[in-house]
Length: 189
Image 1: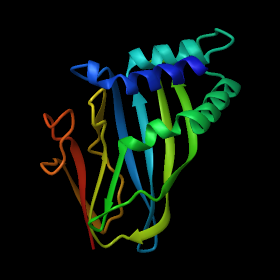
Image 2: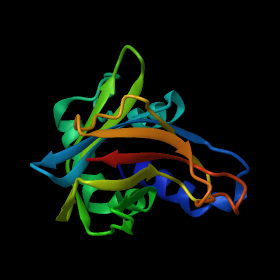
Image 3: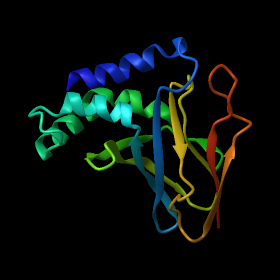
């Protein structure tokens, strides 16, 4: 189990040596609200087959080519205890025009889809302080060094009082200024 976390951390630490993404993550988000406040974001990541294969080789202790409940729980614990610092730099929240860093990762569930041979992480970002839903917001999943490429979904789950556009944000550059990442730009009434 330590091997997959070590590979993930090593890859993140040696980012500048690579010219393009080596891990693709397909992302679905859902804005979590209570009344007129944003309380967090639910994040679902589905990893590409290459990463998923390496993950399963490490996590599948009984070598049955499945991710059993006990194996999933062990990986969830390991990710939450050791690799959570490698996940949070990917998350950009700008709510009401202000950068938000006050959140914690919670409710991590790791699954393996045998048919598609892909690992998924589902977790919540819980804000320490709820923020007003009304206004303009930006949410993005970004790797500055472009080692991990996040493919954003057009199925962003938001309240009916909100609308969004998925834009290439000209205010943000990654990979030494060569790329403008996709960002969810929300407007809520």
